[in-house]
Length: 266
Image (cartoon, rainbow, N blue to C red; front, top):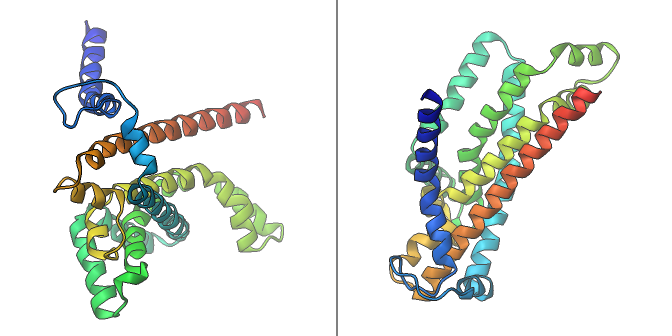
């Protein structure tokens, strides 16, 4: 009975999470102009998605922003985690506490802060994309920090000290000893940073140039009066993003299992 109830509760949870996404995916393959009635099946939404210049440019720009800001956030978050790990107890506590603030802080506050500091105080124009990239880096770097710290705690610290004793410079020991041991945490942080950037709305709204749209800002504006074919093409876009995320997660899990298997064989 306990196993049945556990499986039943898990099934209800998964159904609650994934059923809306599955329904949206089904509607993306139809000619229905709105949710609620399924007409004939068609690939027209996907044709519109990949042939409309505005949609195509918006998708390319969003992923370029996500990958670029995630790369910067990963570098900063990883260096911050390593620095905090090798700091004294008091410094480590202060850094960890300061890293928690952006994590629990509301995105709208982060967006407002970046907007005021860079655009108003430093007079950096929004058309330069600097406020937008900086906002996404500030939003993502703390999560990279949190992904890397557990790997640092799990690694064998004596190997780093042994590398220093053998004459390696701190930089060489960092690149050849520390980074390989925490690489899975770095990749997890990078993927999380990409996801956060793709999902962000508030920071992008306050910091983006007027001529640039991310997926989130475009979707919000599209629901306020865009053409019907554009709205339904966004159903296809949501389905494509979901499939890409699922494939990325499966690939990472398979790579992680392969790495563990190789370690056991060694």
